[in-house]
Image 1: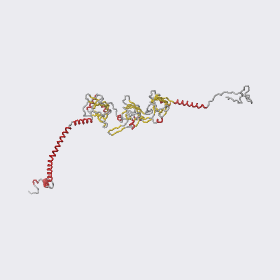
Image 2: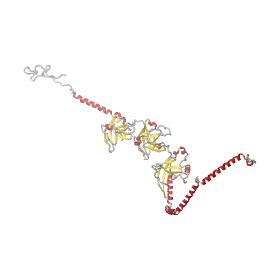
Image 3: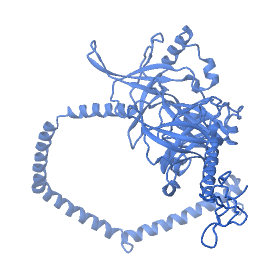
Amino acid sequence: MTSAQGPNDPKQPAPPSADGSNGVQGKGGGLPPNLPEPVIEPRSRWLPSLVWVIPLVAALIGLILVVKTVSSRGPTVTISFISAEGLEPGKTKVKFKDVDIGTVNSITLSKDHSHVLVDVQLTKEATDFAVKDTRFWVVRPRVAASGVTGLSTLLSGAYIGVDAGKSTVDESYFVGLETPPAVTGDQKGHTFTLHGESLGSLDIGSPVYYRRVQVGQVVAFSLDKDGTGVTLQVFVTAPYDQYVGTNSRWWHASGVDLRLDSSGFTLNTQSLSTVVLGGIAFQTPPNQQSGPQAQNNATFRLAGDQADAMRDPDGQALHVVMNFNQSLRGLSVGAPVDFRGIVLGQVTGIGVQYDPVSHQFRMPVTIDIYPDRLGSRVSRALPEQGSTANQDMLQLLVKRGLRGQLRTGNLLTSQLYIALDFFPKAPAAKVSASTDPVELPTIPNTLDELQLQIADIARKIDKIPFDEIGTNLNGSLKNANALFNRLDKEVMPEMKDTLTQAKKTFGDAQSTLQQDSPLQSDVHQALQELTRTLQSLNSLADYLERHPESLVRGKSGDKP
């Protein structure tokens, strides 16, 4: 490229002037002669300034960041919550095991304003979380049966927790949990279903015990559709789930079990926490070996206490009604039916009926009796219910004195129970086994009989004429008083003279019997003479015993 030359360039000839000269002036001020005319050529290209390099680099970096962000972005999901408490768009994180896997983009209200919709942008690494069974919940400070959780959010703020699902079906809309799940999907163990009559003091997170060791917790509960009980889901962690056998028994371990028996007071409880929060315990019956390990979601019965759980299956119940003619105060539904210390059943209903024929009130009590509780040998020997043999056997038992009797089970609370026993001296009664329920005869208890006897005695005492007896006794006392006055005035002086004469007689007898009296001396001499005579007779008897011939011949020293 040829650059433009200036007007004073010696190599370039000067342009011709208007008058035909070469434009070169002489010394007088014209152009110098013989100089070429200058040639002006434009530049071929334009070079940019270095100032434009900086925005180009910045734009390139921004483009790279955008590409990186888009390439690292995962799916967007929507989570429904009742409230957005603690959630902030652009700040609240989604965490799995304390690792950020997403961020809350926006929070909006639903159309019916009943809940909020939280849009969450997941990371590319968290794509597997957008499946059907994934669970989301808000982690914030909570106080539950299992303890206090989420305290770390007091400083860092709430975040959304995740439990990874195992499904292969993609999902973009989720209903968030209002409380954290008790068991996450990565925990090993088994879930079991329990059916009980009531929830008691149990709650989600209540502990599950095996031999007083906590091995799991309650994860869910619901009321049965028919309203007759509750269904609970419990989770037993590994390796303790191996102790749950097909024959395991489950019971409420809540509260305190205080018993009074022949050994004294017995206090049973699993732990202090069960007294306040409740709990569940399970164990194999003591007289059985542990059965095969129960499968996941196996179903068990939840008993009210350990004694109820460990009792053998009751079998078919026999419905019985007993009519009492006494007060049922202290008897309640659920009271035991006892046969010589063995609980055979419980009271199921208490009522009152009026008999228009006898114009009396009856107190019918319905009970359920389980004959299988008497043992397998007895249950096998009993005929089938409803059969003729069963009716004949029931008639025989009633004939031998089978009766129902109300007895006091607790002197402090005056609670009653029904005792089944044989009373041979009970009045004769008949029973019909064809009716349902079967009606068994009753007999008053000992206390009631004692009350009747006392009332009978009171009626007899009431018939005694105490007023007439009192009047007669008053007259007798007046006569006795008159007699005592007569004795004092008439008899007493005579008795005094008699006593004086008797005293004189006793004095004369005493003087006669003294040692120095003549009578005493004469008697003493007579006794001495009698003693000497007896001694002589004794000597004669001894001699005759030795010489009996002397009675004929005489004494050997005597002459004829």
